[in-house]
Image (cartoon, rainbow, N blue to C red):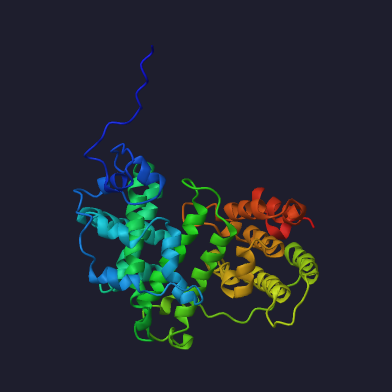
Length: 409
């Protein structure tokens, strides 16, 4: 008689990472291990000696547990946005694993100063803001320094493929630290101290934009992820409104970022503007309601804002136009953002036309490179096939590199 087969198992390891041990799964003991990479969490093997997981919770962690997380306010949404930009980060990550080494922090600060600053702006008038002013403020505000190092680590990961996994984990770690500290200080923002919050909110938006543009380790972004990124951008605007805008040009570290613009009169000629007329017709077919801001009016307002943004991006220098391309998401109503999140067909069609408009303004090396293509793919995937003919026009402009004003109707 054939003896019963033995149950196959795996060799137990005493040197695996803490998370694999807690889940009772085999750890391959890589640095980081495959399981931690798969779930996008910090692996203890990359952080040196393992710490006791029963360490008492610090006062800062206790404060973070009671921090507000509502998305009703764009300012508060910045708090959740850091976690959205890098899934898998949590206060548990900080308590179980030691922080990146001192030498890694110095490397990232050096990388920010020598590389990242030059990418954030090409304008001489604002270069000192990002290279000198921001680090100087960050030395007095830990949450901003963590945000700065998180952004630097993300760029380092993308520009060093052989160290991508390691520095992606480090970036998530710093982002988690930034949002935890930031959350406890939201009630302290005032006209006198709003600058560090403004810069952190800017870093948060850039990180979310990068997460949409770079999908090497994940699938396509969902429309709700794109809407969340727009909410983060509106959070920057909300923080800016804490201080009267007219005082920016007179004093303070943000003065060089101010751009005095004359009111724009929309030029309603050209292929893109004519295309907007077709979208108006599509939006008018939606059933109106008695609400002041309803589905129909929010779509009509989004189309009108897209026309204004197009006009703003056809004048002045390339760098100025690249900034103005973000006027559109800053102007969107909450109703329209909810329509994007819920895959409403008209909202997605309008978003596809915005993606085509943004294509010429993507950074050639980083940040929002391939952002428009991923947004277009997300729209196409979420949109019912019977509406695909409505995005054929912007998709052709984007994929074939045709200027939206040189497209045939």
